[in-house]
Length: 356
Image (cartoon, rainbow, N blue to C red):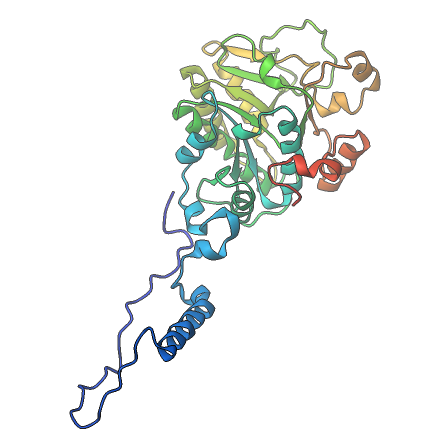
């Protein structure tokens, strides 16, 4: 990470523009002892002046003024490799990517993970400096920013260019973590854990993922990549992925990056990252060991929130709920509240970030 980002200008050496003239043999000089009352008063006065001026002139370390998160420059220089090494447990990391407007969703997601005792594995990839500083102030070491940071964030609408720019960075982050030798689970933060997903990562496959379709599958459905749909590709969700640091998993990420480059966002074709992920899976399926996670445990929002009969029939089997098939920041929060999944209101103390 570049150390030049937002750095304070280096202070020029202080030059004495008015040097004291040579001691005169005519005017007697008065010596002030450091331990006299006058000397102590002078020292105390200087300390007070420095304390008042130092935040603006940079004479004292920033860390004294930046709360529990430590120096701001420290987090600007914090690399993905350092962050991954800090949070990894059993060579495994849980990753999300968040901009400032989605901090409430981050907190809700973290509470649900904390209930499953996996919060220490979490690494927040901050997509703006406000998020980087906020998370590391509350939870030092658990956020990193991979430059360049996108432009100032708003709650980007699905299908917008801002949403595409935000999500298209995802495969590069994941590939970097794989290259560092870690297993990595990616989640969108509009998710809630109801149980431990690691219990469902059977076998030793390269890539694990979930179906984004609302159509009900049998409980014993195949774990192979589903057949392509009407658009010639599958409809796998890019919101919940588990990857092992294998050649196959890295190849899927590289192909995903390539697909995003050849299918950029435009006003006529309002792309997002998910079709490119599906093309990457389809193109590498014969070379990579892929695994479709069980639908009952990892349902799409189009199934869980819209099929009450199915939810009742599969009660006790649900692991991660994704609040998709709906757009809008406030609408997502309302739906979570309606289903008793907005945990921030009553369980904020269980989040590593506390109440934001």
